[in-house]
Length: 207
Image (cartoon, rainbow, N blue to C red):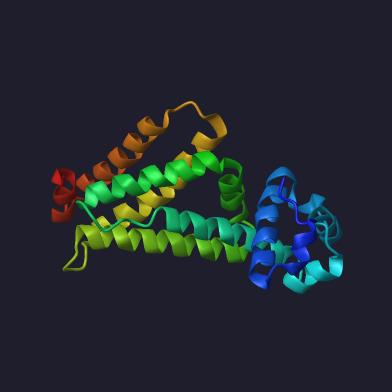
């Protein structure tokens, strides 16, 4: 468990203190439900006063949202495409990175997705990540023009489908990671083929 009670903690700068608190929060909210923890409990785990805890986070909800935002930001950075290779190669690498991160942070990912239904800030964050991811895929498919509406809806629908598949994978772990990657990519290619647009043919034959 992350410890913040070391003597050196008092000498940490503001950003490093905040980073450590968020790291600890990710762990705490994974092991405990939101209602099980108070700010006093969290401060005690951190080895700091409740007043100092409130200095960094005005409320438990702010702290909870911040821990989830950190996880979402980390995930978004992990799946950022390299910019090299065909659209399909870049997408394959991003899906691989996505699955690797979720494999290592399964409980945090599940908590993030579950919280989206009840915490507006988290829902907006996830929707922003989906939108940015969809735009990157569409830019790869149609770099010089607006994609056909059917292609756009296929890509955005696939991202919703992907989250459902990943939550099932986290819960059951009865599909190998490479098989899951191929399933996700195959589903996207199938959706693009069904969209019957020229960009669907492009990604299907890329690489």
